[in-house]
Structure formats: structure tokens, C-alpha cells
Length: 612
Ligand code: ADP
Ligand code: MG
Image (cartoon, rainbow, N blue to C red; front, top):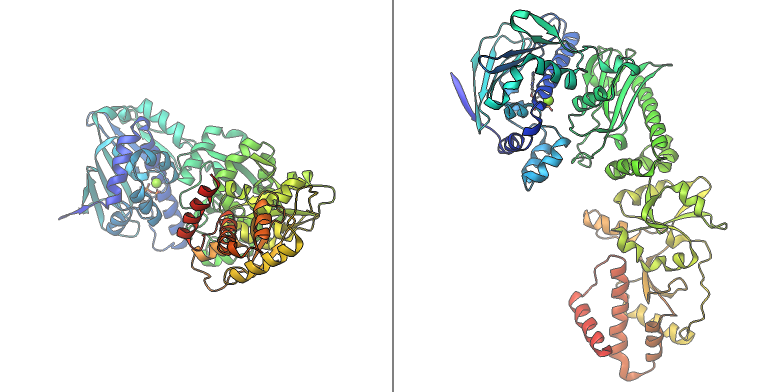
């Protein structure tokens, strides 16, 4: 009896993209199917070791490639873990990772999808690039019943019971007419050597009457000598472990010797995954114990801020027979983590010397990486040193903290920063006017994470890290311009303080502004306006607000004029309206909303008209 089922909608969409957009790289399908076969052998190897009684496995692991030129078919066969009916339904014909499904669903058009597809790979579905029909015959290790799955890739599939001698999976492709190449053994040998040489199991090509031939090197790549591995082999292995299509930005292969021995082959991708900031995203390094795949979900193998690192760690010092949960607690694992993290940071330090190259890494992963400044206590300074920031020094180039320090004024004891929603707006923030005038550089921080690391990293080298509102450099500016009368200013600040008592805590005169009539600030030590806005946007904080301070510029013509007009009874309305506009301006410069937008719009036009 066979059962018909529909593909999940997202699968249909993905299939459509795969078949119609990636056709120029047809050979991809073979590497994907071989990669799945290799994963299946990995899984069975682990299962057999941890359940020695249950598993009666069928000898040596191998992956067989059987072309049939006459029938125009190709079979990829493995003796790995296999699938039962549930597995077929849940893993083939369904996009398991919820993030991927969301992503496919939300992708607007196929054009943009193609660029992004490298972020999760197309996996099994790539078979339909070359096949008009795919038939899977599979039997799960430890189970008697085998299953057949058939689909033409057009919307649905059929599942039925089947017969199969032993565990594993045969994937039979009924090739399209334009995919005949894939029955040619010379071409197959070339494709397998190019894209799948790194696979640790023998890939055996069926040559018909001429017998069989193992085409790949068939030893775990990470255990081989660095000198024997080509850049292409590293790259293809990256694609296998990361399931990405892009090229790695960093490849780091080393053997650690000492209190614990392990091999590590680590990669940093060149593009960020779409789910880098999804809360359920975990690290995805594969952990092997003596070439046996244990898990790619071992928490604690990589710290969260390096969750984008891909690859393999293999240690023969870890016990094979302990549960994954216990492994997570293991002190050995913590040692491996420390070792690999420090190697990665060291490598980044080297690569940082080339700014343009490093920027590629930074643009893709910088925001996640910065989490390390507050998360990784033991490497805090190193992570900070490896971070880049926008600053008032340059509109083009980001700066490191060390570069900032190299430009600091002789009397300067702190690294100053300001936080806000975006860099262009921050550059025009009135609070920066005195700093610019004095040539004191300010970091322009716009990522939510910046609000947090600046609370934990309070000094770097000998420099304090301070928000500009806590500046202790002399910011007074020599001026020869006119200043409002002291007495009038006092009256003006009193009036404003009274008018705005529900919005600002106090109104003061400042020497720090040059171009703007006024600016908003917060009381020293209180939550910045930007952080408050972030919390408000996440509905985390509605009741508490830092005390706002309205700072006015006594040299600004508008303030001078306002102060003069105070004594004139006839100008009362004008004084109060313009004062309100001054506060609104300060709010806008800070990225805050004005309290009455229609009043603001109306009055701005009215006063502009008066001046015209
Ligand atoms: P991925 O390999 O990224 O998980 P694929 O689309 O390549 O995605 O495969 C989907 C799933 O189907 C696999 O995770 C696995 O559970 C299952 N699968 C595919 N091929 C095989 C196979 N040869 N043996 C066992 N399971 C397989
Ligand atoms: Mg796969």
C-alpha cells in the first residue's frame, strides 16, 4: 500500500528555486548526496558504539556510486543509519529547521534567494536539478521494515513499504536528458575527486564489468597532514561541515598537544547566516572522539559570541561512552574551548593587520563577536582589541581601540563614546560639538550590544571608557561671539524648567555646544537615552526613565533672542512656542519623538514663513 503526501509549501518553493536557478552548477547534487551518506555513516558509527548490542551493522562503511548509462540512472548508496517512515516524512519533504522554513517563506523573490541560499545549502533537494524522478529505498539500522519514497519533485511524494537486505539508503536518480554526463564514469570520478575527496569513508565507483574503484582518499581530512591538503580540499570540507555554499573567510587547522590532545579544523564563513541572532541558534561545531562523530550540538564547545565558527574538533582524550549531557559538563571540554578560542583570537589578531580583509569578517560577524567583550571575562581585552567601531575620526574607516588611543590628546585619560540609533544621525548629535571643536575623538556606537559591553568594560589599557556625558577633559571653548545676559538666562532656564517639568528634570546652561541651541542629556550615571529607547522598544521598561537634562547654548542667536524677549509682555506666546520648538529640536537630534508632532509641524512652518 502506498501513501501519497504533499510537500510542505516551503519545500515546493525551495525546489522551484533550486531547479530553476542553480542549474549551471548541477554537480552540486552529487556532493550533497555524498555528504548526506557520510553523515548517515557517522550517525551509525556513533550509535553502534553506544549501543553495541542493538547494532548489527553491515561491515565496513562505504558509499557506492552506481551509474547506468543505458537506463540513464544513477544510484548513491550508503550503509549508514538509514531512515524509517517517520524519518522520511520529517526529514525529506519537510524543512526541519524552523528558521530555514521561515526564511524561505519570507523571501520576497527568487533572485534574492539565490544569493542567500548559500547560507543553508540545498541539501537533498538538489537531486531534482538532475533527476526527473527520485526513488529512495531505505532501512533504518535496528529495524526490520524498509521503505520506499518516490517523487518527481513537483509537489508531492509517495511512501510505501519495501524490501531491503540491510540497513542504509539507496537513492536512485532517474536522470533528465540533459544530465546524461552523470552516467559517465570518467566525469563522475572527476566530480567526486573534486568535491568529495575529503569524505572519510571510501566512495566506491561502480565501473560495471571493469569492477569497482575507490575514488577518494578516504581518511578524515582533519587527521591528515596540513602539507598534504590542498586549498580546494579545505574549501570542499568547509562546505560539507558548514552546509554553506560560500568560501570560508578563515581556515584554521591545528593539532593541540599538552594536557589534552585534539585536532581542530575550524572555519569562519565569509557571509553571516540569516539566523545569527535567533535566540535558539547554537554553535554548530562537530565534535568527534577519535574519528567517531558525537554531536554537532555540544553546548559549551564554543562560546556564544563565536557561534558562527564551523568545523570539527576531534579528541581521543574524551570518553566515548558518556552521554552528551555529561560531556557538556566535562572539564576537558572547557580546556578544549579555552584552547580553540585563544587560537581563533590569535588568528584574528594576525588578520586584523589587513584592514580591508578584516572588514569582511567584521561586517559579517562583528555584532555577534562584540558580545564577547562582556561575555568572555578571561579574553575581554583581546576581544575588545579585535573590535572595530565607527568614530568621529573618519567617515570611511572604522577604528580599533588601539588606534583611538594612538590619536588621543596628551591630557586625555579616557576613550569617549556616544550611543544612538545610527551613525549618520550620531555624527550630527549636538553633544559632540565641543568634542569636535577640541579635536577629541568619540566612538559612535549604534548596536544594542554596545550599551552592554560599555557597562562591563570600563577601562581599556590605561584608558577609562566613558560616555561623553561623563567627560572630564576640558571642553570649554574660547569664544568671541556674543553671549546672552546672565540674568536673562537664569529667567529663561527657570521658565523652561517650569514649562517642561513633565518632560525634563532640569534645564541648565552649557558651554559645550557650538552649532545647536540646545541638547538633551541625562543625569550622570543614569541609563542613556538610547538604551532607554531600546528597552522601550522591547517593552522591557516602561515606567522608569532617566532624568532628562535640557542643556541650552548661551551663544546661540536663538537663545540670545529668547532671553531678550522674556521681559516683553506682548511676546509671551512667542517665547513659550519657541521654547517648545527648542526642546523638540533637541529631542529630534537625540532620536526621540516630539511630544506633539502636529504642533511642531505647524509652528515650524509658521516661523519659517515669518522669516522669509
Ligand atoms: P541536511 O543534510 O542539511 O540535514 P538534507 O536536505 O541534505 O539536509 O537532508 C535532510 C535530512 O534527510 C538529513 O538531515 C537526514 O536526516 C536525512 N537524510 C538525507 N539523506 C540521508 C541518508 N543517505 N541516510 C540517512 N538520512 C538521510
Ligand atoms: Mg545534507
